[in-house]
Image (cartoon, rainbow, N blue to C red; front, side, top):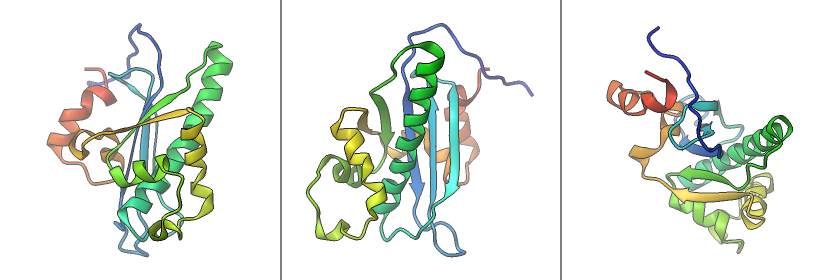
Length: 168
């Protein structure tokens, strides 16, 4: 009850964090994807989602790549919405992820035997990256805000990220 969402006057840029919790669901072993978007580096969060993935990921890299795909879909939607409302372009969108394998898979269009099984519907992320609609940045797991959308949150983690989620 003591917190609220507050926007401060600043330059608007679209930033995102995305994460996945590999095979966390004991019922079917599907992973949880999570992402959140902000219009400034300091928050607050304007869009977020946590969802069980549609298929079982065979590796952490695949689960994170699927999460990155969902994040790109939301980025496309938000960019168009903000362009319609504010008459301003918000691309490229900076997306922060804590899995270097997923970032490398997106940046390298060469097919690897170990990733051949990843569904083609997730590879549009590569097109977004190659057309410079997104910028991928690595962020350590303990600095990934999207972590609160994929795993049970402990008090210290929530305290650490509360300034992004709420205005105190």
